[in-house]
Image 1 (cartoon, one colour):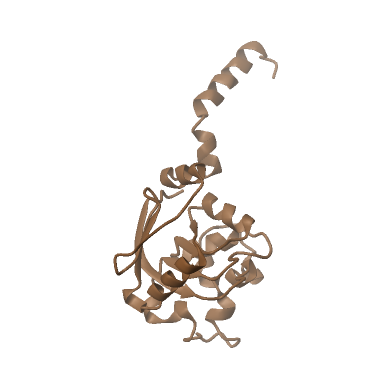
Image 2 (image 1 turned 45 degrees about the horizontal axis):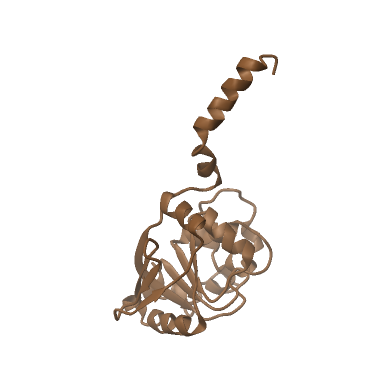
Length: 201
């Protein structure tokens, strides 16, 4: 998993509450177990009309936000059914951080396991960030995971809380497999012990 420490990028505003996982990545795109290629399906029902044409009014289709790396979203982001494809789709599109007042628990935990940083802020802070994000190409935010700060385009700073273990995993690029491999010397020692004392296994 890619390490996350500091990110400076365009922030796209998505002032919609209760964005569920089916909105993030519709069920039609769930036939794959690959993490790549899902970006094309991100918010597909909002990005495209029924005839397949591009909905130019949707924020991520606007020229200023097509390369957005941060999403500033409404309350209860990632609710609905459990699907790891949701953070996969966001990451594949280029979104590395989502900021909201709250997240659904499963989406929140899946995000950390896939290198996506979800940040919880207060409603007042979200309103400020939403205003920053509405500036288009000038809507650059800097997210510093080490100091746990969001720096706005006008120099404003918002502090955020994060679980120390989840922070450690993101800073070091550790998913569940990576965490296991941190203890590979213990695993090797255990396997050697078993082989020496129970050779019939």
